[in-house]
Amino acid sequence: MIIEIQETPDANVVNFFPQEALLREGRAEFVDAKSIRKSPLAEKIFDLGGIKSLFITAEMVSVTKDNEASWNSLKPLIMAEIMDYMALGEEVAAKEDEDKEEDVAGKVVALLNARIRPAVKKDGGDIKFVSVEDGVVWVEMQGACKGCPYALRTLKDGVERILKTYIPEVREVRNIEETTD
Image 1 (cartoon, one colour):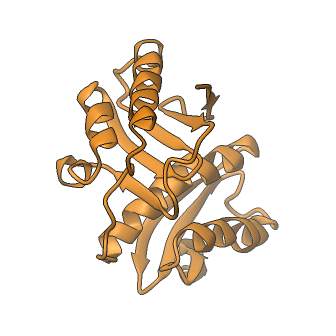
Image 2 (image 1 turned 180 degrees about the vertical axis):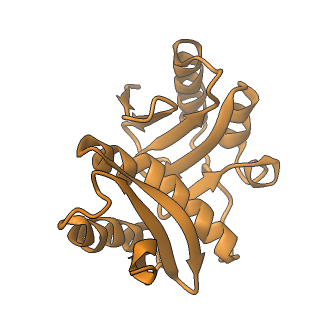
């Protein structure tokens, strides 16, 4: 089995793309001891040590490590855990019925870190999660994106579209600066 590895502009985040789907639908995020109990794969990867969070979709596992951990030692171990788990053919995560704002916030942060921030950083900016309230995600555009005439287009056509695609609870994305003008 081949697993593609994609490094991101954030040195603490690496994406792993196995050839086969990990989830049938949706996505799952694991950030603490409570959440990893829902996934044997997440437990095994967290047990390696130095892992901060996991974000899993059908096509990828995005891993965020602690600053002190080394990708040189973690990458092969993570790949081995993914391959072992896929050989078993089991579901990566148990189904969840709860859609609390804190769960939505965790999903938003994971997706921002895995897919959106790397693209925004390539243009010299960054995007920081602030909060989620009633389906409205509040972010702060930073760096070159702050005050950029294209920031609103990036926010609505890019960030909002991606978040709404992967996280159905998201209704809108707004820049925190919109309230301070």
